[in-house]
Image (cartoon, rainbow, N blue to C red; front, side, top):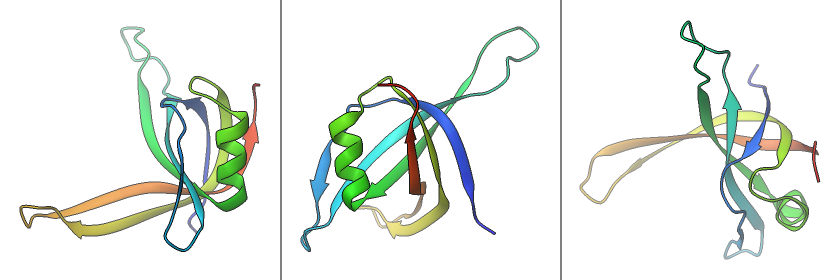
Length: 103
C-alpha cells in the first residue's frame, strides 16, 4: 500500500501551470513539523507535493503561502539524468485529496 497523509503549511507561493495537453498542475512544498528534539528545538521537513487538474486550480485560487492544509496521496519517484549525465531521483507526494484547514 502506498498512502501518505500529511498536515502542514504551504512553503512557497502557488503557481498554476498548464501542460501541453491542457492539464493544470500546481507544485508546492509543505512544511511538516517533527516533534522537538532533546534540546527542545523544533525541526521541520519540507515535502514536495504535486496536484493536478481542478484541484490544482482551486488550490492556487483559494490558498496561499503559509496556510495550513492536509493532503492525502501517494509517494512517487521519477528517475532522470541531469545535464551532466548524472542519474537523479525526484520523490514527491502525488496529491489525491486536499483539505483546507485555514482560509
